[in-house]
Image (tube, rainbow, N blue to C red; front, side, top):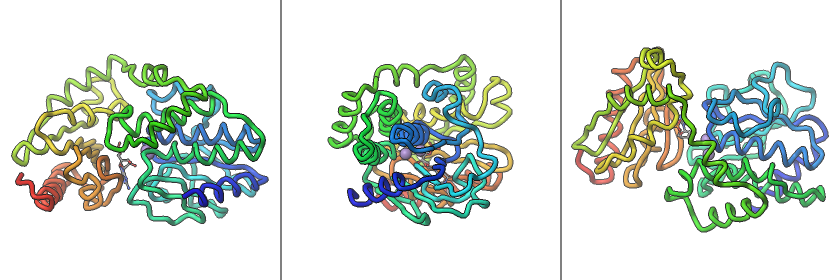
Length: 329
Ligand code: 5GP
Ligand code: MN
Ligand code: MN
């Protein structure tokens, strides 16, 4: 791991042209935090770096105005591409630019167990809680080599990524190493309370939609699985958007007695399935069966089919996974 971290830092430091930074569709705190932390560290080291990402409203507090751009329209000459927090650097999972038109080198830094390692350099470590922690290790090398100092600006987005991917340091991936790394980021000026305060501000429409989504909550498989569903009619009634839906799966996840929570985001043409496990069943196994990916406790899939079909496929995959671990649903 350390050797690959140095190799990625070296390649970034040696690149004279533009460095383009991208992350996954539906970006989360780790996706944005990793990109913004790397961008700021690279700029502090004297490099040209730019993140492209359409921000969900709940993450808009993190970058300065104009720091993150929506979409790259034309690839700069001699660009180096860094893809962060994505298990598959293809057009379906990466947002912000047309990957089909890019012919340069790709560096992928990621912590998904389902990573396909298709980049020129893949720094992939599924034992890491967040990509942001890996970027912090890269930033250490970059800044030291450039003779530049850590600043609160660099530390804050990286702590945000560690924070969101560990459920605010509550999930099983909160290892001693994660807590130590978080402590160092706090020493470098990242403000954990501020980050959590800004992350936990929901607009009224969030609650209007939550009411409807909770109304759809269903227990199945002998009470071991809790599901809920949201579609565009529900969004319209609450004047809400798909971004508002992000954390609902964590809300239903707190249902006592369940081993798995599943939120179906029914877009009509396709369904996004968000899965969260309590640690006995693998959310990743179910997601992979449905054509997606992720981590053991948190995974997802995008299925190009109508809801009833996706629900049936989920039921079958979940039953198989419950049986595999000796649970009778
Ligand atoms: P979420 O449920 O928060 O959207 O995603 C949970 C985890 O599953 C994340 O690590 C995310 O990258 C992964 N994931 C979600 N949807 C998909 C998908 O459609 N395909 C793949 N490969 N991974 C996904
Ligand atoms: Mn992510
Ligand atoms: Mn992540």
